Length: 194
Image 1: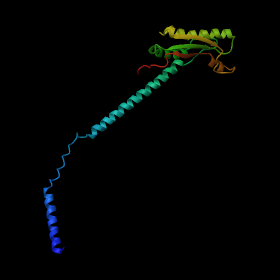
Image 2: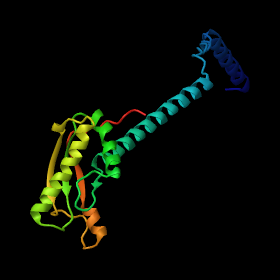
Image 3: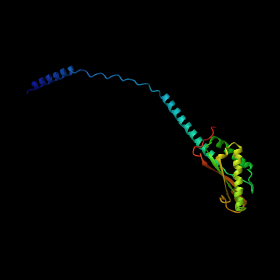
Image 4: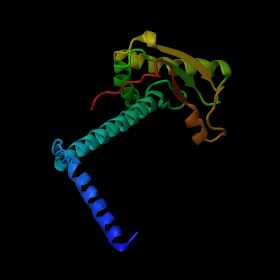
């Protein structure tokens, strides 16, 4: 093949290619991009901030209630103490019992056992009777302040359950006490709204 024929063949080929390209439909124009809703970043930030404030508020309320329940439970089981050979409620004992009354009022399903205790001085019989009088005094005080007597059980342990050992007044004074045990209804303790 001569040079002329090659050039001619190339020209024919180029023409054919050009003709073929001219018949190819043009590529479709890109479809217009549909704009979605406009994003307002300040509204998103505000929504997130509100959600965080609500979560923080709920967490604070949960913590307040948990702390209130713990305080109520602590008040219900707080001990009262007695003077030597006495079953009269002291002023300090009255304040402790007074703190129990509103908790018992808003939790009518709670039952309490009052356990009377003495120091080790005196006979077993005398101490059992004294512990019984001490427990009965606390029950009487609570019933006089509106608590149903059927919610309060009493028992005396006399000197059988000392919390402090020794023959000094410090040990004796810790053992002259009423203890309070929640025997029913303490699982769902409610606290007053503040």
